[in-house]
Length: 327
Image (cartoon, rainbow, N blue to C red; front, top):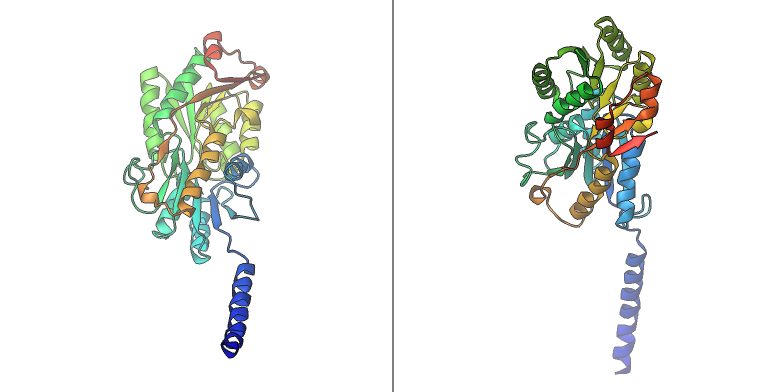
């Protein structure tokens, strides 16, 4: 018996030592690839909302999860390279913000789960099969599609009753461009408005587009929620104020940046909710079985300070319907 005990003792010590060593190995942190067509400056609120959403459910960036950020700085052709980089480095989940980012990510991987945040219709764009059962490796949140551009034009007409000439500032290279243009042209016809198309593909196109609006005697502008417009919000807001042109935007963050008004979903809240999709995927859920959420609650935000700056009085009936008024 004594010799048997001596025989087993070293083995027990060895097993204990190995188990202890395994326990000391650092745990591999989940890695998230955050892909945006914008820039880090203009996208601060959205990224921060996503981080806060992760924090709310127990993740701490740098300690329990890693996020790698890639911004295309308004140059849509860079998105594919960034998405491929995420595939090469084998991130666990790609978070694709905006329709161009979602399309770029979809085109480079069918294996890595993708969580999207778009302002267009992901079914019409062929990103997912249906909202209820997206299929494949993609799910997420959509904040509405082209139909909202008609409503924005209608609101612009309400705050400027004598409006006869309006403009749509958009990027024809963005993913849902033609759908958005078709919708707003249809609405302009119903409202009896002449609609001027102002194309912007790069930062350098923004100022000439405003100059063209002035030459065309445009009385108000509907802004598409796409790069490069949402990549350089300060430039856009400053030019609208300089030319005293009323403009309505698609994202609710614009009025807080000095824009006149916006109509759409709550951007910050929806980016927070993206974190829940990431969490479920990291815990084993399949994107194919996770319905894409379409945010239904839309809000009108008006910046009265911006209105005063351009000499515009917002009609009381429109002001009464606003969900938020910045004074």
